[in-house]
Each structure stands twice: as C-alpha cells, then as structure tokens.
Image (cartoon, rainbow, N blue to C red):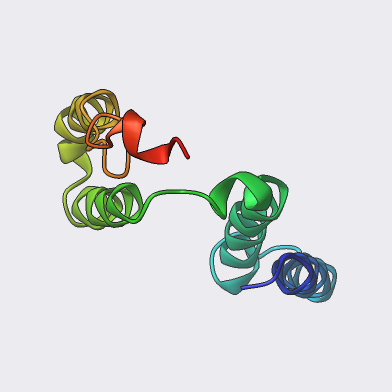
Length: 107
C-alpha cells in the first residue's frame, strides 16, 4: 500500500470519529472510538512506512500471528512479547555474506 493512501485513510477515520462525536457526544462506545483507534494505528504505520518497506517477510508473518493470538487470548501477551524478542534476535540470516565466496567476485 502506498504511503499517501495510508495517510488519507487515517485522516478519513479521524474525520469520521470527529463527526460521530459532534453528532452524539454522549456515546462513548461504538464506531467513533474504534475509528480513533484504527486511525492512530494507521497514522503510526504511515510514519513508519519507509522502514516497513524493507521489513523481512518472516517478521511480518510472526507479528501478525502474535497479534492474532493476543487478540484471541489477551493473557498470551506475557508469552508473545518474549517470543518476539527471541525471534528478532535469532532471525534467519538469509542472503548474508557467509555463504558467498569472496574470491569469485574478483576479476
């Protein structure tokens, strides 16, 4: 997804939340707070987009899986955070210089 699109969706969600709050300020549960939360999340993604473009696929899959588990069972966060830290430290080193022969690159 392009960075401008993420920013536009985030701003749209903030506007929808503002309109819902102005029309019915007494309702604290519902679509308005959800729009604010998702808008904040997308604003963070918009800010981090240049770094996320180079995010490895295995880390993306791991983060999405961990978020799914935490949403399903919130107490799993105590287990998911250390696992993510361990996976980030012990990440696969695909495409590194270890497997290449340095003498083959010489003319």
